[in-house]
Length: 178
Image (cartoon, rainbow, N blue to C red):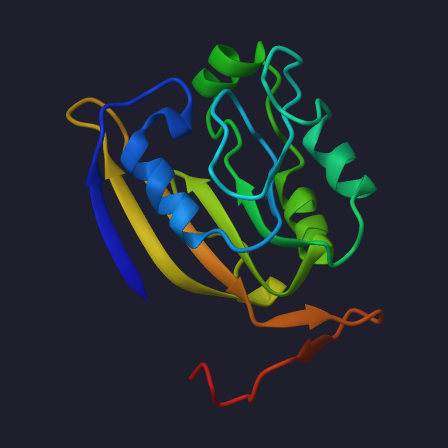
């Protein structure tokens, strides 16, 4: 797994931190969905969504409603940067807090292509996980200085898809990722 450590002062919008923005852009491939787009656009083939109509995004929908409408196997990269604590939800979304995150992650599995990447930002490295068919390939820790939690940026790669009956179908040799 590739590892990077950055020191960036905290910003209201994640991608206002230039070095973190570059790290994320480096890991994006193909059609990229930025599901919680915010204020800053990325220099990738980005489809951005944010529930806040004041944000300069392509779409303004609830995240779960948006992924439910997406075409299956369409995105090569999905960026998940939700408001990951109550303070952030109050600050950025008027108190609207995300409660359906695991359900959204299940839907992300369906809208991503075979070798897609999911980039998750937050305070932990749970990510999509092996249960959803993803392997961790990179981690960036962003230290914001004393008095602030670090931001963790996890990059995962899809190594298998779900078949219709819910069982996993591997697209790689079983021993490749031991």
